[in-house]
Length: 185
Image 1 (cartoon, one colour):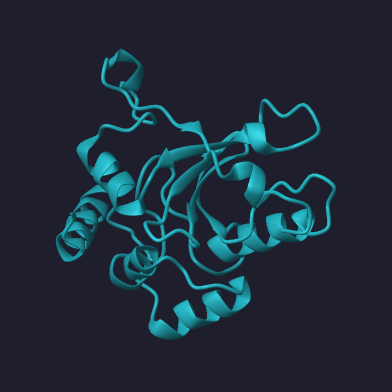
Image 2 (tube, rainbow, N blue to C red):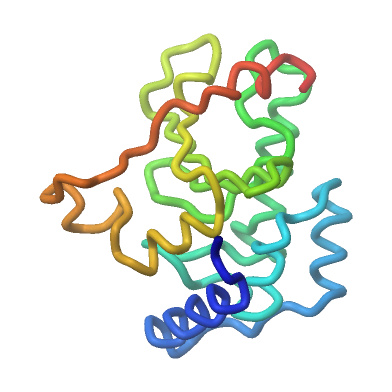
């Protein structure tokens, strides 16, 4: 079991060492505003990171998106994708799955705020060939804390030297995807 206080401290330390220009953390009012717009509660660890570390700008690759605001943000990206999915014959984005960072090329890391551990999912739409979007969703980590630990250890599939490692754990198809992408879901 991960000590979340220690994990948040280590993420804050890494974030500060990676960037001297981190945005300020958000206050409780911004968390409440974001959750109101999302229509769901953020995963508690995700909310802590925004409240205690910074309003995005840290983490793997391009860093976490800002929570709210103009341009690309957690709330903006989620609402855009959900709006396009509601009522669609083939919904693309499941309810409760908030994008937290972009990998580029339309790929996102997202936290399933409806799962207790905050599963981290990879949305990789590039192989999409029509019909169900199920083939585009992968389970990156069974929990957000474990995903952060992987980043802190430099052991993720997204690390520059990942292809040279024998112990690499690559994202696997997300088994719950089909039920979470039902039309109207």
